[in-house]
Image (cartoon, rainbow, N blue to C red; front, top):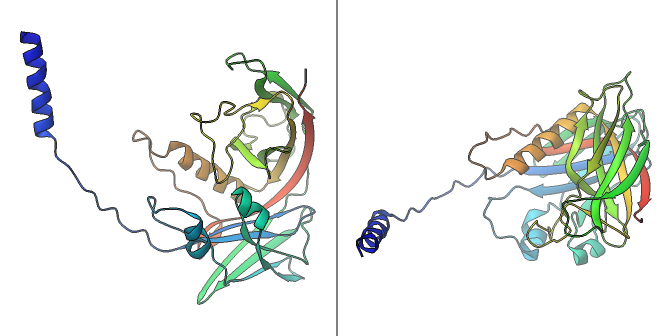
Length: 296
């Protein structure tokens, strides 16, 4: 009885001392956000959006009416040709809720290895500029295979393993994506998608790929029983992109901030943008592709 009385008293004291605190979060400064890319053999793609408060409600109406910038003049140049990009509403991506579904796309310039490119965006009185380079070399993995994970609930789930060799004569930066055919509409960056060769220069090494999340309707470790895994029977295309340092630094710092968000024991990671007059990145990608059919 004494123990019950003591416990009741403690609970009463705790609830009596609690105080509801209402925090008024500051509204962030309005800025434009650029996600632009040019890849070998492909036209440039530019996504223009506005930043928004962290707890702002997000629905289809907000995305279409408030998030995307649709009245910009977007030009990509290789120093000789100026390509004015056209605005696209990609209905197939809208239906699948797959980012991006509103974007600007070029029609004159196709990405080439070793070329330098310039981006100019004009939105009313705002001018945004950036530049990037598609690296000169495309790299391929030596060997790709799939192996079940012993910690998975069944032996049909596992990771894709890679054997690779880094070029010792170059400073290299990489980004890796995968796409499960008939299951993913486009390529998805793996978890921890960017690497530099500071520890692997000139070495032959093995590592595995952890499947990343979809772009809009993200799976989670709670709802997706295959979270992080590739499944027996999947046909997976692996994309390896050679990128420059500025592109690497943007994605490295963005992923660092994303993975640590909400952790009170970590310091905020300043994101290293490479565009001027806005937030974001203009990246050049020298990409190669491999296909793996997962089977025993």
